[in-house]
Image (cartoon, rainbow over all chains, first blue to last red; front, top):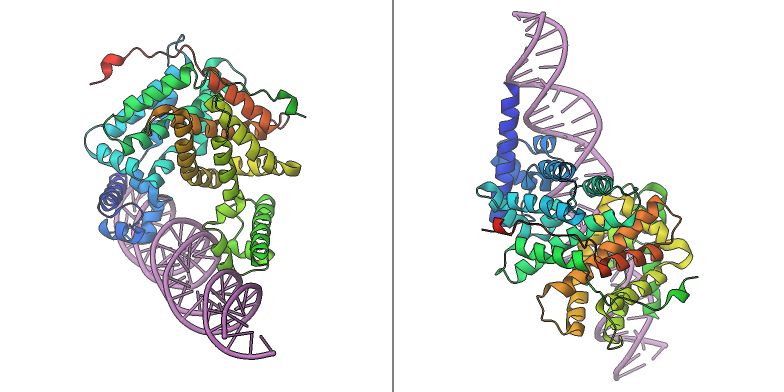
Length: 200
Length: 200
DNA sequence: TTAATAGTTTGCACCGGCTGCAAGTTTTTC
DNA sequence: GAAAAACTTGCAGCCGGTGCAAACTATTAA
């Protein structure tokens, strides 16, 4: 079958990309090397992956799908940030599981380029999450809260990874959870600028 | 003076970059065009900006400096997010001269490349802001709250720009303020996942 | 005024990512 | 086995980005 061969090539490319990225750092690997390692031409590489990073990251469209699914099937009473939490937890667990994904996860977390590429691999992803969450919450599109929840959740993840990198003692998931907790209950109860009059 | 001329060239480049990006879309503008429009060589462009996106984003280090200053000289009793708010307000006001902010905001939110670049380039800013805020709050480096405040504030700004783009009725500053208010008092008081036992 | 000096601009050569095209090569289908 | 569809490949080329060294220009000292 043709399908099999395509999958095989794709896997070979992804594997080579990951291996070489782990060896030499994601920014020091060239597409030429990856293609060579997978015994195809450079041009063929770009028939499979639109960007170098996609090959290193592997397929991650699954993650968005799973997150959206988690959102749609969440119990009715579940609060929005809780839903977000489960979705995030799911993805992070996946990155931390055994085998290739854990190595890939380590790589991602050690490289800002990849980390941000992962989180922003598509702006649409974030928009879709926001839309799904807004619908779930029964809020109109364009209201602040669902968008802010999604965006702040992303911020919490980034902060967690950053802190984890600086002091690897605490697991990322725990740090993310702490961030979510803070966000949930208020980051600064004493907030209160007194300059409303400055608005024109 | 030399200084003046450098600032002039820089401004000319940034202006041309923004104008052309608005005209043709940020991904269809070449550095060559920008340089030509500013009457310098391509190579000179790269003496001023490390990436094409930096020119379009128009980031100048002055803003970070001013924000850091604002933080250090803030009244003792001021709560951290309030301090953050004033700093952000200061920068946004500066950018807002005759609607430039909203046009730039629209542009940024409509281009994944730009948004990605914005987040990448703000990693460093966020670190410095976090350090300053942590010191102000008397918290140890590596604690979650100051980092989260800074990062979430950034998220609120981005969300505000996005919402403003979708519905330009409300000014960006007001949307940012709403976001801050939400963050301050808690994004989701009902947050409470019940799966602590899942931690291994 | 002039000459040294330091800072800026520029052209040039080059790399790597990425794309369109057109010509092969394989695989399927009849 | 031949036609058609699918996949691969080389090639030419664009663009972003960098290092280098020459040319230019403003500043300063003599």
